[in-house]
Amino acid sequence: MTRKRRIFIATMLCVFLLAVLTGCQFEESQEKKIKDLDYTICDEGKLPVELKEIIMEKRKEPFKLTYRTKDYLYIVVGYGAQDRTDLNVVMKELYLTENAIFVDTDMTSVENKTLEENKVTYPWIAVKCELYDLEVNFK
Image (cartoon, rainbow, N blue to C red; front, side, top):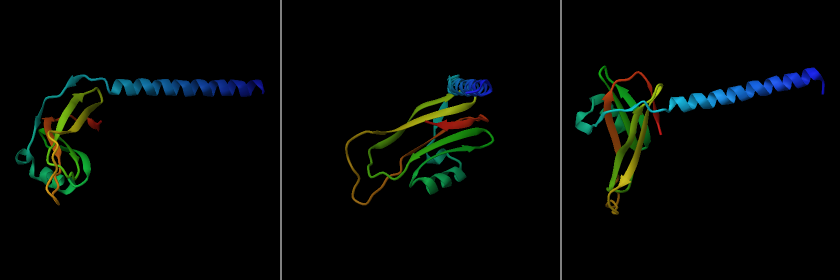
């Protein structure tokens, strides 16, 4: 192997390692929590009409969406069609980082019972919080 080739390979290896290490550091700082966000869980009656219509269109399949008004940010997570009545969607975390808002929800079961035959529910949660001009990341 020539000397020029070894120098080239060593240089490329250094560039690759630098890129990998920088990428890991960036990702770590992006998820560092600054603060938990205050939010209000909204039932259907407290949502903007257009947002209610979007939820009704999407509810048969799992979905995640955000909706902004001039004053608020709405974050909605739906779990699609379910054949049980004992399911609730809960907000596990909603927090602000330097570059984004992170959302983590879960579907929980209250009891062990099933729906009557041919009936389906569509569990979802909608929360309203202060308006931020940041990307929302769902966990």
